Image 1 (cartoon, helix red, strand yellow):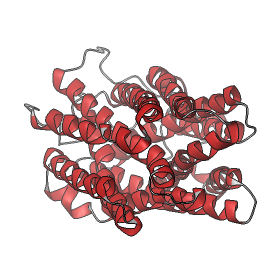
Image 2 (cartoon, one colour):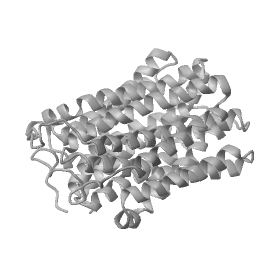
Image 3 (cartoon, one colour):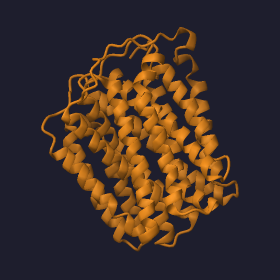
Image 4 (tube, helix red, strand yellow):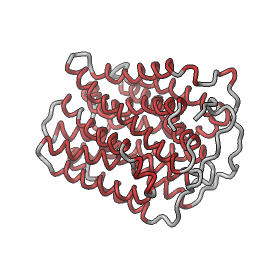
Length: 399
């Protein structure tokens, strides 16, 4: 299952995972540097979302022009450019612009990863591969808040920790340089998907669930450190490591879930992890004891672990063999969630405090569970709803 192509996709996604979990605590740190309100700081999440929406709108067209393999390379380069811009200064419009660029490139990487893995590994193995890929990404993401905290401690500044993502991207590119089709030999992908862009009601319901899972993850990873700092009285560096507790739970859940994803349906698993998220959130929110609050964040991470991988695989399954179109719509949905949820929570927190504002998270959980519970059919399971890769998508690699 894990051939070199699969590992290449895993590690490219892991690079974005590292940046994502470095980005979320850095928003709070950047707010202190720029001396702005929580709402304005939350606009960095909105910038990430604008980039994601733009990528979603263009994704299917870009795949048709470049093919998945070349577009994955382009997405990684754009992601790195955005990271550099994001950490370059303390001028709000420029740092937000960096978030936009990073969101555009990162969304290309994460959505192509799902489409390529489910095509490379048909059937239930596709969902397992997507979950495992996200597990590796979140596993690498565990290190991100720790590096930021360490960089602060040794007076390098939090930006040095974020820039590690660029170093990782370059290292992966060098290690797998012979496994990617050169640009001059790239063959444009054939348009073999149905032309109709009309999607079923169940597909849009699945996108709604995906939006809720994204809102949960970004609300928790961006604002939990603010709660730890301003409600629980932790230092900036220690509060930033609160995200590590979430990501550790996500990593454990994803890497330990293989037999569950092969045995149980996505709907059943999603309802279970939504319940786990509620338990973890309640523990985190009511606790005034630091270690118990971190334990609650870890449990939330366990709940979040399977939400996005299952939700996006589920949406692709409802796409009637239109994987690239489905991932484009998925990018629009996740971009909307990334843009609206953290910003709205930040604006609410300016009025009530971040601790009270976090109560919107269980609302997202309940809405996601309702979306799953009211689904009237199941996604395609024979091939995950994904067409085979066409010539030029990926290098020919033996399984």
